[in-house]
Length: 297
Image 1: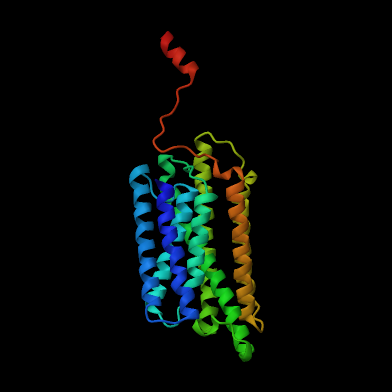
Image 2: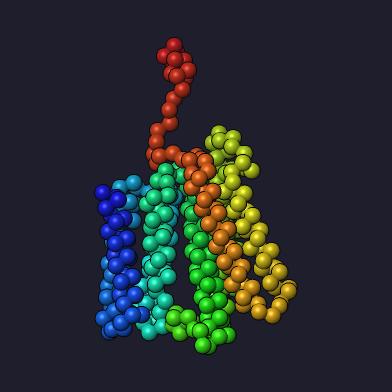
């Protein structure tokens, strides 16, 4: 049932690429409305799927890696729909739709459905951690896209005779430059909040009896390293202004995206995905020794 739901909204997103491609080859007044309709159908099906998961599993859609990646894909789908509705003539929805499809594929075939820790004391901090890391991921992905678009736009303006097909539909260099800068600042703040809340969750796990070492979890160490890199990058960019600063900012956002990909690999391939994962409302098992002592009494 759940696989059918994922296939339904993924198919809508995939079909939305057809009018996007036709708009470049054979422009027509129906291309944009058709793409908006398909994206709207995909977002509606996607939203219904997330609501179904909430009702069936009685948990927020940030309680597992699969839910988390699906929420990121849903946010990008909504951004694509808004961007296409506002900027019909100068929209760049194609790359965003491709991102939605990639994230949906990751959620279906790579991300695990196992739930994270469900301790009452850590519920609020778990939500803070999930939301902050979700926003940091979205900011990194948006920064990566704006960095790529900045380099394409700059190359097209430098060589007018060899303009990229997407260059005339992209925002201005100034807009893309500030989008890159603000995305890096926002990412650093959200990563800092995510690391702080993650350390609090780790402390709750220790109090619950989990003796796993903090520094043996590659994902936690990698997230801290990514936060340190963003902080150092922001400090260097603030005190050391150079020519072609826009290109440097774009390269840094692209490097941040590559680091995020490494973190995803750590999350999907290491034991962090199973670390402290328990089912919601799972009753605690009474040790056999306690039962025998109770029976003797």
